[in-house]
Image (cartoon, rainbow, N blue to C red; front, side, top):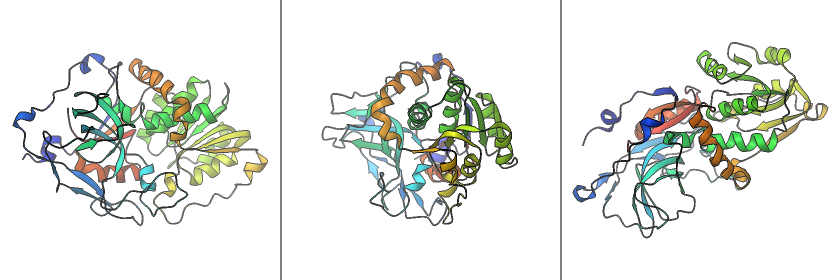
Length: 378
């Protein structure tokens, strides 16, 4: 068997997507089942609650102990999906802890594969709603091949715009939905308002920046490296700065006050935003990555400004907004990406065996744009 590392390569790749539809018209090549024997079904397993950052080989383990017979495995009315790309998102770290009955999401199960959004291709189907060759997206386990019997949450990607399938994990997937749905629901933005976006080069933040600009706002955006800041400027931010080398309070004192704050980080940036919040500001609390990997989270000291500035905090889960916004999102966002009006960047890591490191890199902010694990070519 050819070593997967040689077949897929170990180098991460970054790309700011420049769309060329003509490069994506070829039809997928499907396997010839008549000559196939059982194949290894690689998996990434959750191995236990981390005390800090999730460490590859300790928190997560790559496993090749299982095989699958692609031709003869019983489907029982389901579909067999070959996973092509998997998404790495910060919220996955939240699922690596003890179960809390008040939480919305179930935690990862020790000894079972990680799960998150992915895209794949249907190899076999016993369900009339799916046919061989369909591209599909859903929450999938982190493994190379998956049999899905309950297909209610599987979405066939028509992809009339012929955008890269991996875009359906980022700008046209859950992160894009998060930005789109919550901006429309909670920002209460007016032309001329000032928005402040943290982690603005990330999959969610970059979409928020562009949505805010499209609604006529002045956008202040922070990111964690000069390269990330350059990207944020390129997508329209009026004021972009590296929070590691520039004081956030100084920027907000000069460029604020803030009418809309999109919080991907928590901690000190949240405190700074509260300090320079305008009367009646709306704070959209999307993530707190600064606190995910520490036992001593930063204590925001000026929460009383919620009172004196009449600030509204909006905590949300994107799944609760799907019923209102999802279908419109799929009608509009892929077209914006195809036309170049919505830009995005991907950080692509090749090989399922590198998914654990990809997750750690996201936690450490080493990625620029959407982190995607490339599991296989079609």
